[in-house]
Amino acid sequence: MIEGLRFQRPVLPASDAIERYLALSREERWFSNFGPCSDLLRTRLTSATKRPCVPVSNATLGLIVAVAALRGRAPSDAGEALVPSFAFAASAQAAVWNGLQPVFVDVHADNWHLDTEALEAALRSRKGRVAVVIALSTFGVPPPPAVREGWEAACRHADVPLIVDSAAGYGALAADGVPIGSQGDVEVVSFHALKPVSAGEGGAVFCRDDELADEVASLANFAFDEHHQVTRPDGLNAKLSEPAAAIALASLDGLQASLEIRSRLASEILSRLPADFQQQVENARGTWQFVPVAAPDSAARAAVLEEATRRQIGIRTYYDPLHLMPAFSGCARAGDLSVTEALASRMLSLPMALDLESDEITAIADMVRDGVGSAVTASSSSRSSTSQAVAQTHE
Ligand SMILES: Cc1ncc(COP(=O)(O)O)c(C=O)c1O
Image 1 (cartoon, rainbow, N blue to C red):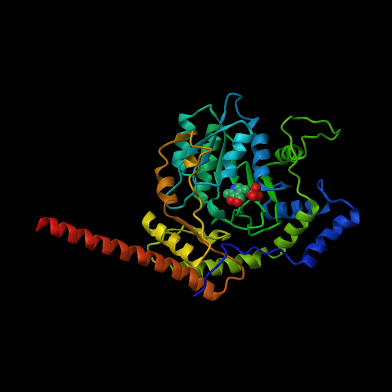
Image 2 (cartoon, rainbow, N blue to C red; image 1 turned 30 degrees about the vertical axis):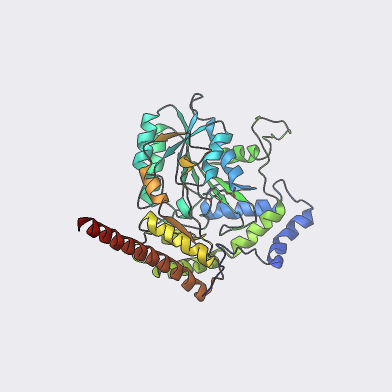
């Protein structure tokens, strides 16, 4: 039996593949500040998504500058950002860094994305108070087209800008062919070491037009104008370095092949899980940073977690609800967030690696099945001891 399996085993492109791009920077002796690799990356991302974009040093700073660029367009007394609670912390933190209060909204029980009806209700009941919506392509899966269109229509109707955090999703296409990178007013992706496109640290901000992209690029460069004058106090340094851009370019070269491998491995894992484990709607369109799945209930999840600890197999429980975290527990909630709480109590993220071996896939599936099996045995033996106890009290 395999024991000791890392949650993820990230890979970096080979050094000669990186050097092929970095040579451009060496030639120009230009290693940051929108140099040749960052420029080439921007061109490639724009041609794949048909949207102007700004490479950034990580997605968190990308989200921060995106909110900064868009919040100026909201009424000045709008101090809130609507964010799904079933999300990664950076979405809410980007709001806070811009002086906005996160207000948490529920997700849909089947697709696990921000619930369109809950979003519409929140925009209606908080009219005039919402500066921005920060939705999420949950687990890097593009929302079904009807969901994306629902978010966009709700935000348009309320005249509130829409940012989509698609950190893990670069390379994915929605069912109607719309690529990650072209949702909402702004969409942000991450090139963190654990994402399918990796620069070690990095990311990109895709914008609906050139004017917005120029503003994001300026904010990411201390808000300098062409005369080196600072135009906004909230400018910062979010520039992607040339070595990181070279790694991202080399990683992009291998993206299609790696997405195919990830998808095949994820299908193999999922096909071996018990039938009552729930998968995210349209998950086959995702990029499989890891393999998220919902156990039938929280007891089954707890049993699998215990089994994973016993076998030293790395699994995670993304996403723990943001509204229950110490940093955000005082924030307002738009609705009771009951779907988020129920879903989060069942979530498991199973391991993924491009070089996952078949015996490792077996080990992951066995861990889940044995974990669930032990929970069933424990509960039926506790049921039978309870019924014995009940029988005894009746004697
Ligand atoms: C959904 C989501 N948003 C944002 C981030 C932050 O990305 P970065 O590490 O590039 O700042 C992550 C990172 O894991 C993420 O998963």
